Image (cartoon, rainbow, N blue to C red; front, top):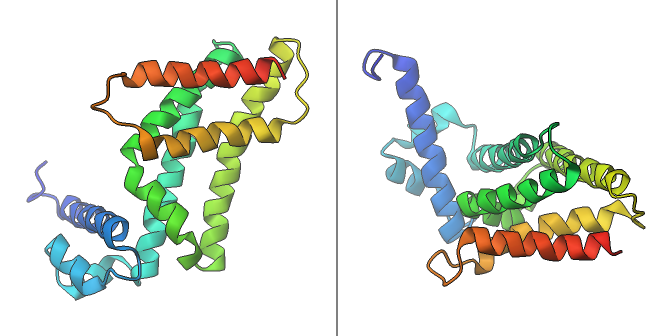
Length: 199
């Protein structure tokens, strides 16, 4: 069914266009320096057209950040397989999170820079999803400890290390560099496990 035949698809397409253009504007100019009027022009809609989908600019920001963190949680969930050992799962989590941050570079930058713009309820929603992502990785570290017959002093530093090194990856990774993505991802996993398995 074409978009012309289905009004709902047209509506969804317009909403996605608003989010796409808002993400670009918030990333390039910052939240405060991006106006609804500027956004409506970029999206090819009237100001009223933007307000048809979102209450205000804060609502748009929340939608962008929430969807980004939901995608991150799903990335981690999809990286875990009951058929694989926890080390393999963690290696896949690291590699898939690296792919995630490349794909969502703008959203992650906005999240780190603008999350204080959200109201308390919105921030709590984001933090809940972050805690969910944290717990998924932590559970694999607990499983790794049992599988490798080792003892970690604390799961928290190792869990935060995975998120820190994958999040910062987007700051320095050069897709045109001499080393491939897979080579870098494998080295980062190797460095992580050398530290964890020998702690």
